[in-house]
Image 1 (cartoon, rainbow, N blue to C red):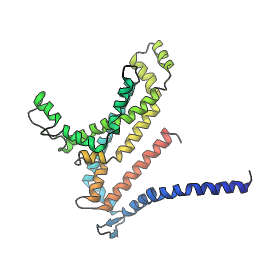
Image 2: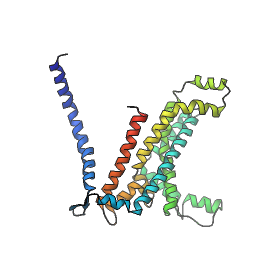
Image 3: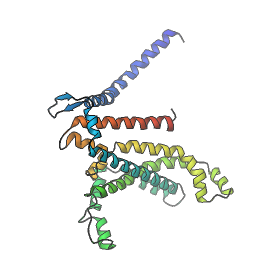
Image 4: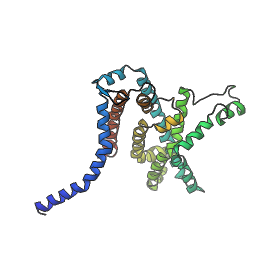
Length: 288
């Protein structure tokens, strides 16, 4: 192929990808760069900006609410990632067995994931309503475990527990789908060989299933961490008193004493953490 033809093909390739690069730059790169720019300013609601250098970042280091939101986010991430991974794996192993109406059960498991967030949030708020909720009715009136009705969502400590449960319930189907797809490709010969070697059900799970799922488990864990570090709508709609990092950033930027420069600084730090996690996912899991 002549050099002229190669150059022409290169120019054609650049022209074809240019619109996509332009759209990505406009919708993704520019907001990120502008956010980094704002993190070095004191931003007023009327639009005026005063350069303050690293002051927004140093103020964060002395803000106890920032550390509290980090602690809440860590608990939220551990609870939701472990919960969705374990429940998704258990559901996938169960749905990989032969039984009547298996296809119907496989479909029903996916319902929480596809249900609109706002509708299921209302349902969960009704379940834990302190006056008419099912939870308090069962605990107080049916089982008589306590005499007082608890407002679990109104209390930030117990609300965090409810938010974690809600996230596990709503998002474990995506982990289930990934695990089930991989389980269906595991050769039956491996289980038969393990059974011949005297391995019981636990041994076959430990020596065959887990090694085969190692790549998928790493993918699920890392993706869930990345997604839930940014999770806003589920937490805010269900229990806005649970201050994870995205909720804390929202309050800094749009509620109470507005400090959009500080909110931009929080977002930049969070972005750096996410970039590190994405790099880990690409290099260690995808092995690009």
